[in-house]
Image (cartoon, rainbow, N blue to C red; front, side, top):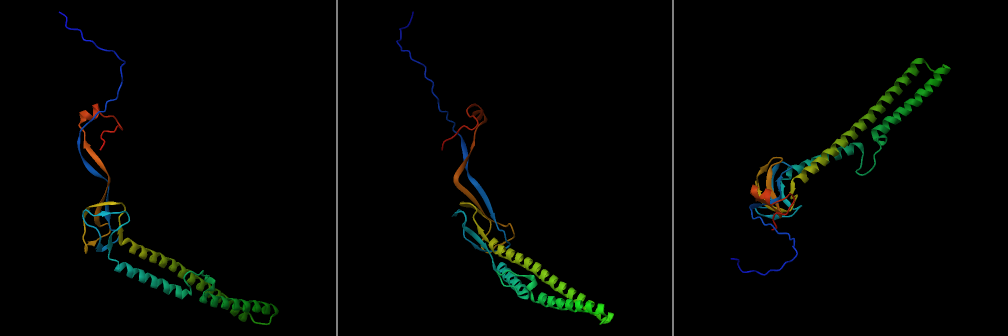
Length: 239
């Protein structure tokens, strides 16, 4: 026997997107992690953060003992000033090597010897002086020329030394800058490797900083789910 008839209605088929939900377990990880190390060797004289401290980019984390670095700057400055004093130079003024005292004296002696040689050359042509007198004038001129060249070379050597001393002073000042350790990113202190008074070598670890905004989720997605329910670049989770 047939069952009772059921009345129904017909309608157009509607296509809808169904949201697929996949529940997974995972862990939250920092977006970025940086190990902060010292650029200069020395005793850690100041440490401004602790485990769990929140810091901002550019904040001073620690300071290495600056006494040795400052002493080297003072020594470099003193050496530079001594060389400048020998040259008769003043800071910020343009220096002309030909105007150095030793060069000017040697140049005056060379010019005078040249005049004597020129006079001797004319006199010997007329037979008014002997050959020996002319030869002596030539020797005097050559000697004066050699002294002038030596004075000019000495000044150039001092100028080269001055450039080296300026470079040394710049390095000494940079060494002071390297004693100040600043945070490259904003975040929180995850690990602390040193304490105040600790001697740090170059590249000695001080703290680890993690950026906690945003956080990254590392889910453990089953292989069966990843192949059947997820596509590349698809949003898997919405936190």
